[in-house]
Length: 206
Image 1: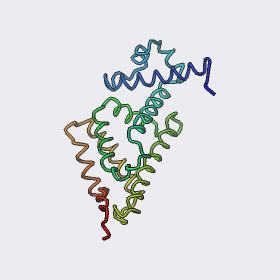
Image 2: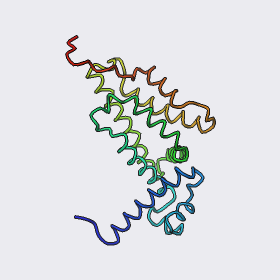
Image 3: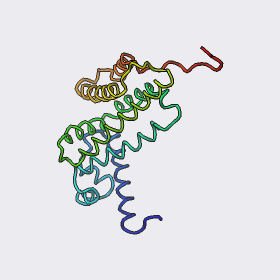
Image 4: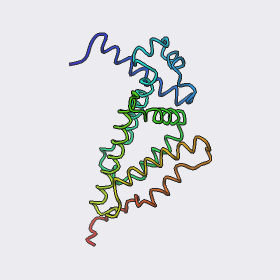
């Protein structure tokens, strides 16, 4: 049953705020990620904006959650060729992050602050890391079952190392934007053996 009344309007306004926030940060950069700037962008007072989220930290956590939802649709881990395109999809995601430095800065900031167990975004980010590692682990295991990746690769270790490298390279890039994050990640994926071999051609019985 469709939701009606103030609750439905509140959810719609929250969604509007988050989508506008993504646009503002992508366009104007990390410096635009202030409550005042975002409130002005959606025609609310600062208190009116925070009314929908409870706090600045909660707002930023929800911005990241909304961004993850958008990325999840683009990455489409349920797609039939996801595992086969694993390396390319990782590199594409890394490239997209670097071309949106405002969101990358916000993500790194919230991720760093949320290491405190009582931070409002702590559980969300813990679950986020668990989920993205699991997606990659599942893809690696699928490729191993198909004989397209070496069985010597440890899916759990590789998944953790890949995302640790992404975070670390992005942080370094914020201090020195001459670092080629995408090519470094491509090198790491090759070094870790995460480069699927082509599928056997039809009729290949070898």
